[in-house]
Each structure stands twice: as C-alpha cells, then as structure tokens.
Image 1 (cartoon, rainbow, N blue to C red):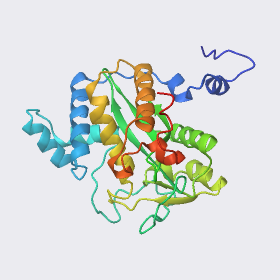
Image 2: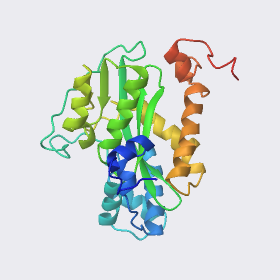
Image 3: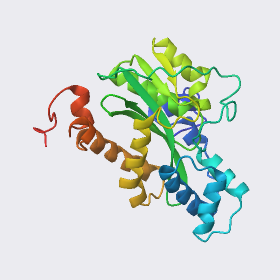
Image 4: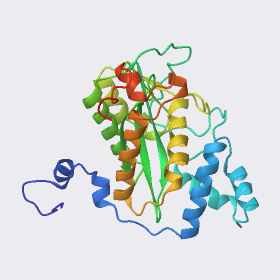
Length: 277
C-alpha cells in the first residue's frame, strides 16, 4: 500500500496515514537459525523466572537441557533479545554515555490515583519463525495498559509512538518511570516528556523491583498467552495482542486490586462493562 514513488506523499507520511511504522516498511527479515529461535525462547522463559542470571548461568542452564552451547553464543542471543542480568553493579553496563540519567522518584511515594505515575518497558516476543519487540505504557495505580506498539527493531521510534498515543487518549501523568535503556534516556524520549511537563523517573541500575508492575505484566502475558500459541507473522501477533490487552484491561481481575479489573480501577467505576456484556 506504500508507494515510494508518490510525488505528493513521502514514505513517512504514507506510513503515518496507514498507521504503520517506517521501520516495518523498510524492514527486510534476516533469516535466523531455527535452533537459535528455540534457544531464545528457552532463554526468555528462564529469564522471567531468574532475571538475575547472566550469560554464564544461562549457558549452564541450557547445557543441563542438553544443548552444546558456549557463553559467547548465549551473550549474542541475550543482546539480540535485549536481556541482561539484574543485580547491583555500580559503574558498569551504563546507558548511552551521552544520555542523561534521571533519579528514581517513586521510592516511598504513596501512589493512590490514576495518572499519578505511568511506566513503560520493552520485552522480546517470540513468533513461529522470528520475533518482535513489544513496548507497553501502563498506569501504575490501576495496572491498566494505556498503549502498546510492536517493532522489528529496538529503536526509539516505536516507544515514542506508544507514549504519544497514551497521552493523546488519556492525558498526561505527573511522573513517568522507565529503566535506563538507551531508548528511554534518549533526547527524543525525555524531550517528549519534558514538553508535556511530566516529571521523569528512572530505575536504579540493578534494581529489579523499581518497575515491578510492568515486569509482572510481561510474565502474565507470556505464560498465559504468548507461550501457548505460535504466531506466523507480525500481523497475527498484533491481532492477538490487541485482543489479549482488551481482555487484560476489561475482564482480568487482580487480587491486588480487590478483584477489580484495571479499567474498573482506572475509571473508578464498579464493573463498567457489565451492562455491555
């Protein structure tokens, strides 16, 4: 549907009209060995259980499963997936050296209302013959997923699109919390938050609990949906996630929310979808 020879509309403009990312248009899939995809799925599952495991421990785990694999290969696959071990390591594994890191603002903060704090994160999503990256924006108080995007790459663009959609649909939060990944410390990302008067908060390095609710979202999504299915391509995955996130927001109740759904907490209404059901 995109015509690169159109004299009136640039490729970027056509992609915006069609609501697709430029990276998706330009992307040309590179074949990945089936064995590597299998290993990445195993690494992803284990990482959700043991996020403190680095490449050595992950290598040992895979060897115990019968795979003859060295640490260098595990390191390469984990980098491709955007995974790194979570543990205190001062002055190591820094974000982009030219990007400013902001302090963590949520410690001892009583979060009592929607749009007080939003958070975001990126995760790896396996497919039948490849993988994609997923970013989601969540309201901390209600656990509601406000927006999400899929991408073939780990660039900043799809993160910006997710935040812009959340702001367009729900207004602005008082605080926005992220990790120290280069996508979130970039000038484009922090500039977007500053332009809307949003205070920027970033996880401390090696602190697994600082963005705990979105980490729990990934566990729930993968073990209750993604790992139970085989998506043929990005379109199938996007369609499936759209339905799952709708279910998550509208129907999946949380014990920590007094058995209310994220939408019920966010909008302050008891069972707002009961009449439509």
